[in-house]
Image 1 (spheres, rainbow, N blue to C red):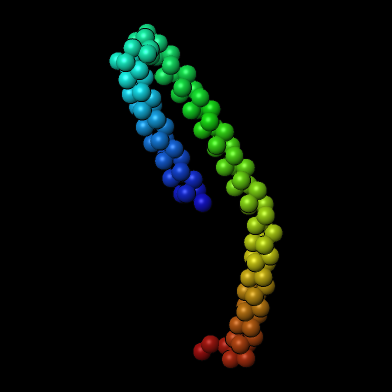
Image 2 (cartoon, one colour):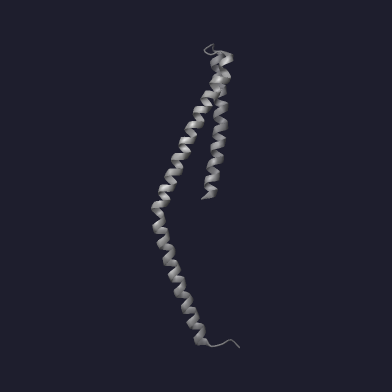
Length: 107
């Protein structure tokens, strides 16, 4: 699960980097068209990036909540499966010990 989260975070960073480049390109086009002043470029880029960061944080929080809720739903079933496997393993261990006892000591 950690590997998946790491990959998702790395993808997010790549998207974030690409997003900043696209915003800068868009603002530059607006300046060239005369729809924005060069002096406003840094402010507009920063404000837009702040909004992107806020949305990314919201998305991250939502995903974390969804993962947690899903895990909480799955946990009882997973624990039941673990308990069942432990019981089977204990039974097999007992059977093995019984078989060893029937065979007698090794020579």
